[in-house]
Length: 448
Image (cartoon, rainbow, N blue to C red; front, side, top):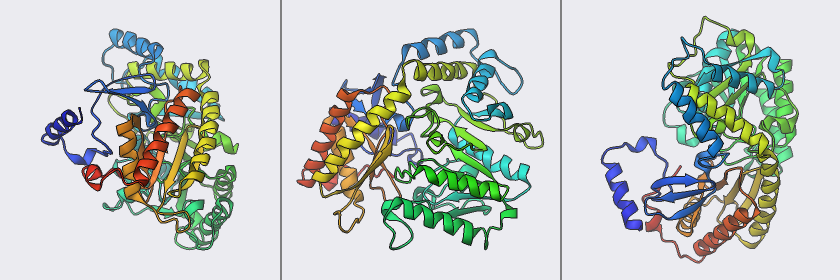
């Protein structure tokens, strides 16, 4: 079975470039159903990656599929730049109803989180007549040049982006960039102080800064979960310096954290919100929700021939309906809390689990050489993820040091599926600790 997968990957390698791939195991997927994926040999996997937090409603939800197909039958192609459509307007209305101060905002659509954050890169400085934006080390905002420049992830450090971005430390309590600090709260205080009393008073005077862009949970940076006070402090700094606060919810929005928007945990109102990945249950769409006066600025265009397609807008409307009708936000909070408790127990039993953190159904398990040194163990992380795949569980790893196993299952999972995943993950960790996974197995799969 595994040989067939490798044979297919060899075929793929001959025709598709590796720059578009992040691979952790030889997975060649044929179909998905609910919370499960099936490969070309028919083997089933419990999916705790959800295609990088895209499949919030699971795979193939019938209400979403049927609605999308019906719209496509009616209109197979339409350029929204020139022609309006009912489903697109209804989606914008629905999103603004869910957004604080939605009556003062408008929506711009795109294909991905990358182009949405690229829109932020263009529109916010232009509107504010200030050249700079502040982002965070470890952040991941996309792959277009503007969003790439906003990002601060190690994997995006080889190409130099635009020079108007000032990157500051994100409060990573377990590995605080400020020496001698080990608590999340104290690390946040140090990061806020550094931004407010050093950066803004030296290399980035407030009158040159248009806005601050942040992730409510820094996912690809290692699933780092700040306290609710962190966003409140960023909101304060933005208000006091006439800047905009931009919140990137591409990965953690649409119910994943136990709220529709992750920033709701902090009880703040961002100026700009970016959505993407899960909004249309797997179909490509992105959204910038921003003040009307910026959205209506015709001097700078942010448009795409096919964004959004009416079929995709319909799928997004149905996705939102399903999330609320099936109480998937409440389920994310409940099952997420259950998983965190169980993973804390697992941490207490294994020396190589240094930290467990999360909110709702985005959880990070940080793998280390040992708890005392906290030295990152990227190789063990890769082996655990590979072994879990062999045992039937799809996961992936993230982090600045490639040592955080990320769990982002579909929001439809129950305790039975959670226990199934926990049992497999526990077995994978034990097998790696006992030396049962060779270096050779992971040699081809470099991940991040």
